[in-house]
Image 1 (cartoon, rainbow, N blue to C red):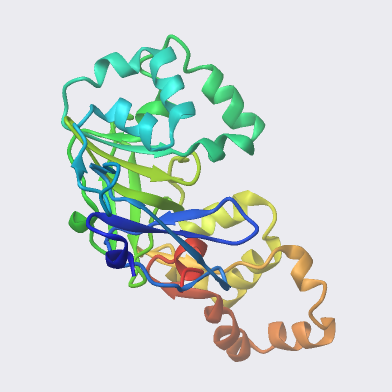
Image 2: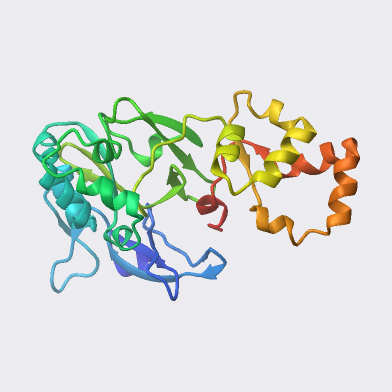
Length: 284
């Protein structure tokens, strides 16, 4: 338990064999499983506190910094570099703001499109890529409901914040790995990767447009379920790739497709009401 380490100590859970880390928002960490693996616990000073030599725990109080410096000190120095090079950091001196800052490890596996988008942020304080990680008010983890849509500074585009009973929180399905970093002009949350805008398509159109899910898209249409899930949701669809259908016995699949009632019973199992993300579902 973190309390045995002295005052103001918090647990950090690490997944063995990976660089994944999750900072608890409380001071009483316990071993649990993350992605099916038992986490390794270590301890460090909770946000806002520091160690004094010779004293147990973390008894020194740190001075607060603005959100840019807070993000940099918390482990998002690469993202902060883009904020500074764009000129946006200078605009973030007042506030209040909430910044969802990608950790440094997020920049090790960027797609080509993300690299090109980041290159366009230089000398561009109105960069859509950067503004999408910011809101114009303070958002603490305790303020978030189970499923919330929040408006960003990027032309009022929204992010979707998920909150799970395990304590895990996500933004657009990206895990929040460190919450509630207090700053003089807002709050910083560290996230596991760059945030991508939510698609404006409904779930059936997004599935059809992707190109990897033509088999399930066809089954949705044949079962009439596509007419249901174009209605206001939210919905979560667990969609097998087309390759997965190659492992399903062809004769059995054809019997199901020929039996409309069987199709209507089988296909809905891939869809549920509400928002669920792999990040949230794997944390238990």
